Image (cartoon, rainbow, N blue to C red; front, side, top):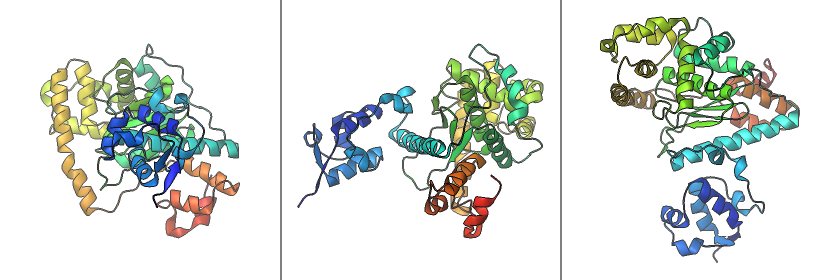
Amino acid sequence: MVKTVEINPKRIEYLLDLFNLNLRELANLIDMPTQSLLQQDTLKLSTLKKIDKIFKKGLNFYTEPTNLSKKENILFRVKNKNLTISDKQLILNKQDDSNYIQSILKLTNFKLERKLDIKANLKSKPSEIASLISPLVLPKDTKDDKRFLKNFIAKLAALNILVFEILQPPNKKDKSKIDAFFIKPNFIFLNRQKGFKRELFTLAHELGHYILHNEHIDDDIFETLSKEESWCNEFAFYLLAGKGIEEILSLKASELNFYNEKLQSLSNKYHISTLAIFCFLAKRKVITWQHFFSLKQQSDELVQLPRIKEIEFFAKPKPICSPLQKDIFKIAYLKGIVSEKEILLRFAKEIKNHNLESFIYSAI
């Protein structure tokens, strides 16, 4: 006997709108006749499972009787025509996690107000805003890029800005290639990128969106240079470079290649990717935008081999975990809101020697 499930068809309509698909396109993706999906209150369980392979919401989602508001979803609030299905799957998954954490915050009475409440808009000078907040957010005396990123995330945690570094499974097909996104009030999601300097710059860029109070989804911060994207790139550059701006501005067009020692030295000194330097100088007409996009293509090609080697020969990487996320879940555990099992699953890579007690009672 074929098992069927009663569903709420409005929820499938909601997802089709969200993913910018029509029924025919969905039917093609799951290799089903379009007619079998039209205005159905019941679906075969096997069909529903196929549908959920696209949307990845869990089977219960389709059976809930309540309808959803578009205001609740960042993909409706923020328009980005460049997003793929994989991008949207990742964003929805992380948005669900942020919603879950916000519910925990309410249950624990954990206050996550904005501490870095700088008043800024697109008319503000990004250099001045960067100078103002630099002492509050940047680590000191840290040479290693990964350590700098980890400390940067910790500094933001102290300001109630929760950063999630996303590591997608190395063998996953059709990975999302978005850089990052910011969800109000305090959540920044940062995709592990092609080198920690690039990731640092992206985090600084997302901090710009936070300061502007504008949710944003960045598929490529160097590709779509709208007014706000340009502002955030300028802010990120001034934030990281600080007093090194004049040194970087002294670079000549002939020195702007991936093998120039002076360029590499400045990149290492200020934890700024060479691509970010190229973009900054293109805006100042040291090089043309055509030259910049040519260098960007070279950059994308150059990073592929090292990342492949990392996957093949080194231990499985783990995401940087914000101390703020740890504190939220430790308090939730101590108040009986989340289970031991959930703590062990969420923080498996952070709990040393399976010592849950040591993890829970370390400084909160």
